[in-house]
Amino acid sequence: MEIRQSKLTREWIIFSPERARRPMDFKKKEKKKKETPEYDENCPFCAGNEDKLIHSFIMETPGIGGNPWQTRVLPNKYPALVPDKNVTRGVEGIYLRMPAYGKHELIVEHPKHNICIGKMNLEGVKTVVETYWMRYNELLKDKRNMMVLIFQNHGSRAGASIIHPHSQIIATGMVPLLLRVHEEESQQYFDNLGRCVMCDILKFEESHKERLLLENDSFLSFVPYAAEVPYELWIVPKEHKASFGDISREEMTKFAAILHGVMNRLYNKLDDPDYNYIVISGTRYKAGEPHLHWYLKVRPRLTTRAGFEIGSGISINPSLPEKDAEYLMG
Image (tube, rainbow, N blue to C red; front, side, top):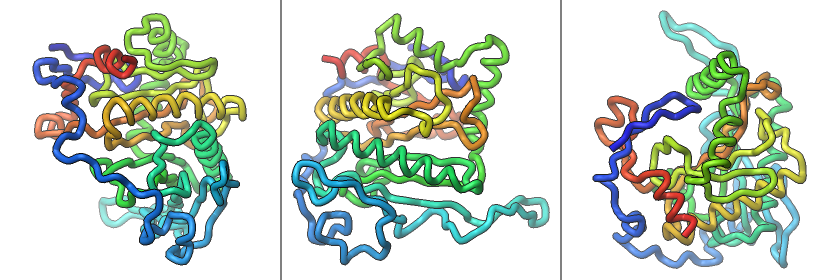
C-alpha cells in the first residue's frame, strides 16, 4: 500500500492494491449493454427529429461522409443557470448570494444515436473539438462570464440523462472555489520554483514513460501519478498555455487525434465505461499567466466513493496508475 500526493493539487491519494481487482473485472458484467440503435424516434437529438426541440440551434457544422450535419449546439432545455440574470452579489443577513446567472449549452456530437466519441472517426472528433473551441471563445466574449467549462457525461453513472452522444458547456458569473484553489496551488509552485507545475509534470512523465499512454508532437496522454480513480487519464498540451481557447488550428487537429486515441482505447479496453471528461482551463483574466496550464481530465466511473472518502476528502484508488497504463497500452 502507498499514499501519493498530487503535484498539481497537493491532495493525498491512498493506493490499496490489496483491494484491486483484475482489469477485466472493471468491465460491466451485471448486464450486457443493449445494442444502441442508429436512430431513435423519441430522441430530440437524432437527425430528422427537429420537431421535438424547443430551442433553435445556436450553430451547426456541415456533415461528413453523407451525414446531414456533424455537430449542433443548442441551449439546454433544463439549464443549471440562465442568461437573463445579472451577476450582482447581495447579502442576506450573514450570507452571500447572487442571481443564478450563466449560460448552459448542449453540443450534439453526431447525428446518429449510437456513435459516441469512442466509436467516432478522427474527422468526427476533430469537428467536435472545433465546436468546443468556437463556443468556448464565443462565450468568453461576454465579460460577465468568469469561467467556461466544457465537459462530457457518458453513461448513467456519470450523470448522463440522454444516450445520444453530447457534451455540455457552462459559463458562470463567478469562479468556483475548486478552480481558485488549483490556481493558487499552481501560483505557489511558480513563486517557489519559477516554473509551471504542469510543465514539470509533463517533463517527468515523458521521460519516465511508466504511465504514458499516447503522444504526438503537441500533446501527451498519461495516467497521473496520483490518479484519484482507476484508469484516470490526462491529456496535456506540450506547449505552455493557460487557456484552451488559445490553441491553434494545428493544435486542435493534434488534440483531436490524441482524444480520439484515448477514448477509443477506453471504449475497447473497458467495454465502453461510464465516464466524465472535463476541459480544465484558465478562468477569465488568467489566460496569460505563466503558472497555469490547461488540460483535459478523463475519469471513468468504475468505483463509488464511500464513507471515508466523503468524510476525509481523500480518495482510495484500488488500482495502481502504472498497472492501468500497462493494461490500456496492451
